[in-house]
Length: 111
Image (cartoon, rainbow, N blue to C red; front, top):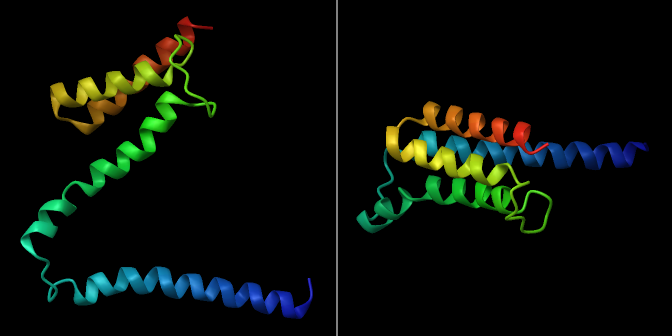
């Protein structure tokens, strides 16, 4: 690589570091003095659930890129089992273990 390309890569990396840690640091430095409106605080409580759903549902329904509701898709029953265990026990670790057990058994039985 030429020195000019290395300089651009270095500057891009430095810029990403500054932006990433700048955002995180701003919450630590200014987090105590900033007050959000009550409606925004209530809305922000749903962000983790929305993000987790946005990550998991496409993987469970379309693991190969196309919707697969067949019995060969072990992700779907594993995900459903994890949700049911989470609703029943209210424990994250139990939900993860339950989902993995159902997923593993389903994969083993459907081979």
